[in-house]
Structure formats: structure tokens, C-alpha cells
Image 1 (cartoon, rainbow, N blue to C red):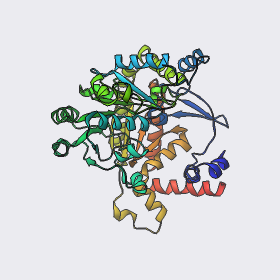
Image 2: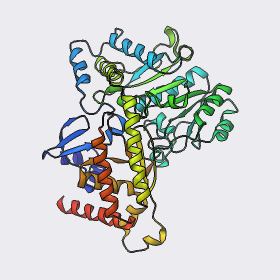
Image 3: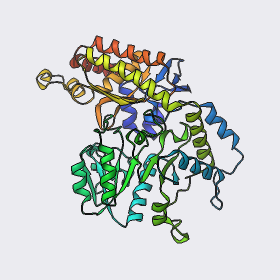
Image 4: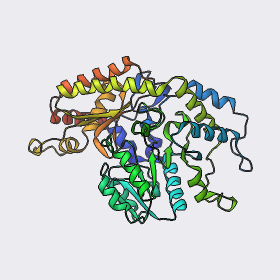
Length: 443
């Protein structure tokens, strides 16, 4: 497996995984539990970056796929009955008068479609996004993603794109005032930015400003949607309705790839109304039978199990436990989150503590403290987590929504062991370097 990845896939990624012993082969998965090829049990608190709200291999989703296995999955010369049913369901559960859906295959594709819809519906070209955001890595989605590391190699990106600080209403209004922007896109909680919650009143203010300047308001719920934060959609915490809402990740139940955006009838008709504009934006696999059947089953599981409320209760329990650890250990700088979307930010070292001839230790201490803790959780406690892409000193916790308190306690106890064993940043970094050298010797 490892050689195949090194020879035929992403060799650099395989090397990175190997250094922290993340290159194990997993052979079975169920709910929050996964087993490696040696039979060891792990708890998945990463949840595929929010794509496993239902956990691994949910039986109700798999059963839905079996029920439609004899239907044509792709038949372009027809209207898919399952896709129509899913679109009706999404219109029923999304806030406000969101009605018309477009189905693609990923979150990035949902964002691409939303940006194109905004330009087509308004006739404007400008787009505004937030610093620290993450909306995907295709060209359009990357153009509204707020970390230079992922943008630099692909420039020039789309023209007419402007960034503003997350949470700054004055900065947003300054950019919308000239009425050149087709849309403003924002995550209700910045996921890859480090689990950053909006300031009080921010999203309501965004709604008012976008309405004032006839700019479409796009809310990216790809990571926050479908019960993750304790409501079906995170924007419901803030009592706002966007003009376009993007979904993906858990929409396919952790089994099938599917992304979607949902918008109003009025906006859709401005962009794609009538037969002459009906095929301006399409997707070959978008709305296929298997993916939409999985999505319908996902919604059923979420509602039947009242999983958003369960996420709210379990999230409160998890965050309370993490905050108790923060009070005890200075390595934890902050704990943030809503529902079962939690982030632990670790302290940055003071520069004077790092002036020693150990470059790798220093580098890890300064930039990858989150990955160090994730490595300890994985290798010593068999708990799967990861750092956030735009802030490597934050590890995210996004377990399946049915995670038990016993499993949360297992995580909290493991963190306590790690933090009590490493009273300082330098100690943690040294431990991680030892793991890396040990991995290199084995490989």
C-alpha cells in the first residue's frame, strides 16, 4: 500500500504520513470505530473533516444504496426521480425560501457553482471573501480561500476578488458600497481557519449589508451543516437566511460523494431560467441515483435520531471537558467550538526558549504543535485527529454525531495523559522528533 502511494500517487503526502506513523492500513470501520490490519481499534474523532456526521458505513445509508441498485445511476436523457425527491427534501429543511438545488460531487464544486450562479444572476463580476477562510482547492473556490500557501502556486487566480477580515462589518461594507460585488461568501464558523466563531451580531450584520447593496450572501455550510453544530444548519444559530447555501461532506452519509447548493426561485431564474440557459452549468455525475439516495437516507437518519440535538448536548460536554484541561495546562491557549465542532489551540513558544541547536525541534515547536498532539493521540492512544489546514497549531475534533460520553471521556483522558507528561512545548517537540527518527529507521 505504502509503495503504491509513493510510486503512483502523492509521494510527499505518503512521506508526511509515514513520519508520524499515520500510514497504517485500516481494514474495517463502523460508526466512530476503525480497525487496522493488526486488529487494533481506533476512535475516529476527525470524522473525515466533518464528512462523517453519521459515522463510518451507516447501515441505513448502505441499505438505501441496495434499494436503488437496479435503477439507472446515470441516464442523461431523463429526469432522475431520486434527485427530484432529494431537492424537495432540501427545500423543506433549509431556512427561509431556499428552493432550487444544483447537485455536484464535492464541496469545491458546490462553491464553484454558487460563485457562477451569483455572477450570472447579478451581472456583476466581483466576489468578496474572508481572510482565513477555506472553500476548496479548485480554481474558483481557491480564489475565495484565505491562505496564501494554497494560492501562491496557482496565481493568477480569478480577477475581481477581494478579501476582508472575518468579523469586520465595516471592512465588508467598504467593499460592497460600489455595488460591483456579485456575492460575499463566508463560513458561519471558520473550520480550517482554526474553528473560529463569528463575533456576536456579525452574520446578522452581513445579511443587512448584503441586502442593502444587492449583493448575494453565500453561506458555506459544507463543514458546519447537517447537525454538526447543534442545529441542522449553523446559520440557524444566528437566525439568518442566505441567498445561496452550500452543502457537501456529510450529505452523502460518509459513503457517496455529493455536493449541492440551494438558492431561491428568483435567483435561479435570473441565472438559469428558461430553456436557453438551462444547460449553462451542469455536472455529469451530479444528482446521480446512488449519491442522491444516500443523501435522502442521511437526512432520514439525522431527523429520526434527532442528531443535531445530540450533537449540541455531546458538544457541550466535550467543550466543558476541554476547558477544564485548559485551566490546568498552559500548553492549551484556547478552546473553541459549537456543538461537535471543536478546536484546541496550543500555545506558541517564546522565541527565547528555542535558541538551541536543534532546528527540527524548533521548527515543529513553532509551526506544528497541533500535529504533535495529533501524533501522540494516534500513536499512543489510538485516537484519530488532525490539525486545521490554515492554522496548524489547532487540532479539530469532529466525531460522528452519535459519539458516546464514554468515548468523549476516552479522548479527554488521553489528552490529560499527554499534557501532564509534557509540561512544556520543547518537551512535546522533542518527543515528536523521536517519533520521526524512529519512523525513518523503520522505513
